[in-house]
Image (cartoon, rainbow, N blue to C red; front, side):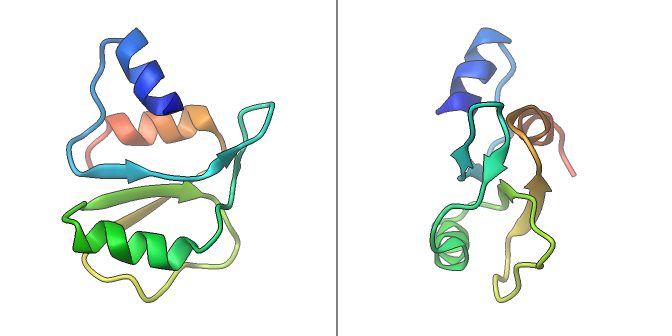
Length: 85
């Protein structure tokens, strides 16, 4: 929801096929949401091509057909959502 609001305020659309999920701290840091891998697999099954998730030292493996982008905060997530890979 936060990225949708930023996208609207800046009149800059999020790249098609991108999905984002995480919890957001009070200072804008992204936190891991529960059941990340099942969510990523479901996003790939639904046809999304990119997912933006909170940064973690452990790599997420087991998801095929989707690009996984890690971000530390909401601002880097917004930048990643606007750039094509």
